[in-house]
Image (cartoon, rainbow, N blue to C red):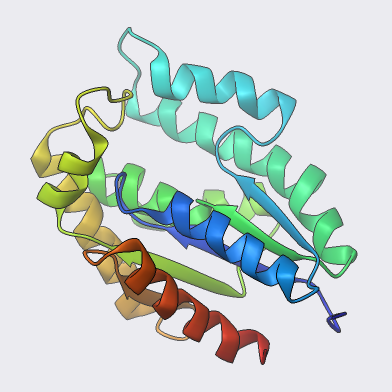
Length: 207
């Protein structure tokens, strides 16, 4: 099945929301329909990004909020230009695990950063490339933390207050962008969540 254009679909949500599982299920589902996809992620999709990801998630010394934000933006700039845009030009459906909304939710709402400035910097980093559709997997913070288990990376290890601010930030973004961001109840089972995902994507891609 050949599409008339490429589509950019992003998957967002707090750590432990189950989005990575859902992106893999959707990728397989679309491939079975004969739709060519590209599954990618942030941070770490490019060679440059892999190095930044290692620092962002596993660096053990203090990292300033601004340094953290700019590393995510650097990863995004490389990712958008080198991977996402070429795939869209080839009329693929790009499925991306995290994108601009993550920086707004985590470094903006979670770190009490300047949302307006982050929006400007995101636009610069991506040259204005936005997702056509964003699936926000919303889950209660306590449930999400329990799903992560005991082995957590640098961001996953932040306190419960931080993760609740991130969740509320995501929900605020959904309110501000109802056409682009669709909220998925991720407190349910994997199969129940995926049925919801298939319905949203089916309507969006008309399949």
